[in-house]
Length: 396
Image 1: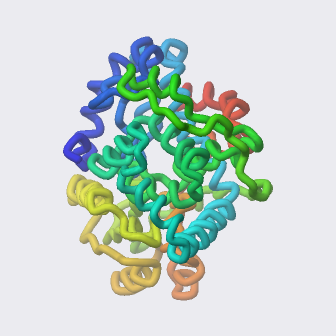
Image 2: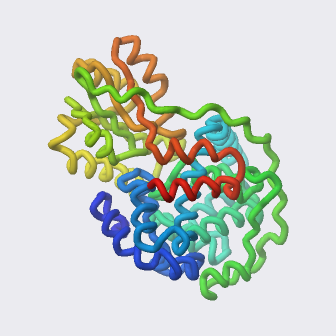
Image 3: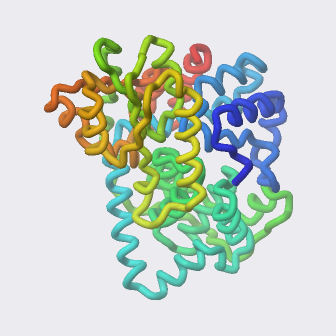
């Protein structure tokens, strides 16, 4: 997995190297799934942990090409913001996914035929050459081209007849960029649960076109009937930033969802101590791939090493209770952090605010401006969300 050194410096270098092709070349060839993935940015593992931020990527490409010339690439960055905002307003969808995944796993444990099909899919032994290649590529590299992800999910659901939640779990355990929002909602989209009644059906001709003839599978499902499921819940209010108060003894809390606290430091935060929370194991009830856990660990270490002279001593905390102990041990008046979106880190934090408040310690959560601008518009489908992207791109 050396294609993604777990450092901010590597992310910035990749962005600089990719920028020249982010306009016309990207628009023409982005759907080609070729060895080495030369036609896409491959920035997503770093973006997932915000070692580099969406705002930085948007600004770099906008300033080089202009918003119209690079519209296709900028739109793809917008999908990430859209998915995050949509799930942030509907956390019950994440909760339901986890419950349905557990139920599907129980069926795998008790139904021999289902277990065999699940194991064959996860190990790349289904006999469908493209699918098996992608399963093995994912396990080996921690990455798949976006079109391969769509086709893989379609084959998993409609051809192999496997529970979508276990496919989403397979991705989340193995993807370096495994993101609760993008991953969960993309699988729901393929299965017809996100845009109700609209599914994605992988076809031999489309796969052949996107792989330049490397694969032309036979025996794929010819119909994609929408999966059954309840309609999504109504959006709930989004979080807003707490008052930015740096008085007293303030500690910085870093989660794996946002490892670029430079903006907080530049605004005047001078933490007396820093805590880190790594919740990678919470992505699944099964073991997360070693490469994924290592990548997250080293991304966190890169952040704390890069800012060592600005963030005080660093303590790794396993969960919310550990954070409370750290705050008490350091006699903190308040803890400041970037907002942790829906997912394992948020789950691990639990009712942190209430527990800290009970000890007389304030929690100051800061929502990034790009999230505060974009997320409220993620109320329906992406095409309605595109309207706000013009402003997001201009203000990044």
